[in-house]
Length: 399
Image 1 (cartoon, rainbow, N blue to C red):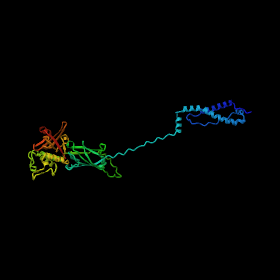
Image 2: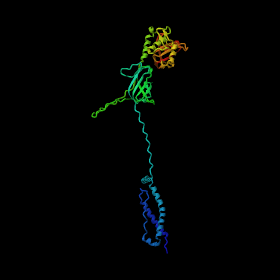
Image 3: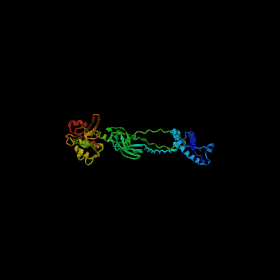
Image 4: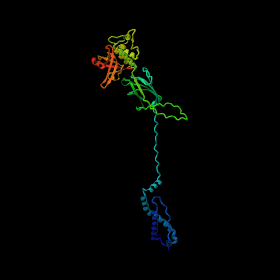
């Protein structure tokens, strides 16, 4: 009769297996959470083996493995959970996570190379050219206070220049290439002489630092050690304003003949010689006669524009290449050598003409003085003339 597999045997086997598993799990190093493989279950003792029928041993072994599976699942679950909680966040857990989780590579940040800085312009020469101002012997850049002088700079990378200042006044960039830039000077401040800095600016209106053009050097000898060369400090660009020789000649003539008529050359229009005298001064300034504005000594002929204030105003208005009309509100633009005209009765006609001989600018305002014939005046105040005779005043800025 077959011996039954009693509950006592099963409990004994269960306890034995549980104790073995507990011992195995307690001996597992906590630094390594990976799962260890277990050794096979120890065989039964001789007494336990004799107590079981021989023909049921294979079946018992098979059942024993089935029971072990269930027991391991039940017994190990709480123990394994405890181990994971105890070691969570430690170094072993960090190394395990690093080995089991593949890190996502951080994309490299794209680096955009900064644009290469444009080379600083260099100036190797500065030459001023003017039809009326002789070039000084020392070669300095010089021009009349009335402006209009052409200044040429040569060097490298000059095409970066967009605007130019001569002192406090803006000049004109006529043309610009990498190696040459052509400028035109404005009138000086208050048409006064003196030396002013020349400031070159780029498209953003930022002053450009001008470097000195490097001088070519000879190839060094293979055996000689070249001496150190001190770095040269670039000289600042400057321009020298001088009195306009045309205006100087004009005013010299006015001072000589405001009370001493030049009858020999121009005759005399008695009682209305103001425009005749003004025209004479413009001839000394460098103007030439034309069909509308002329005087013929042989025939004693005076064209209307030469002798009449109203006709002269119409002539100047029709020839902007020679003069620009200005109102009294624009007297800040009036300069020595310009033309002043009065309309005493406010009829619209011009009644008197003179030559500006002095312009004074103060905090109180601008005062203008003039010279003329008929009344034979020199450095007479425009404002005083208006106060005595009334009327209005206007000007022509002579070019």
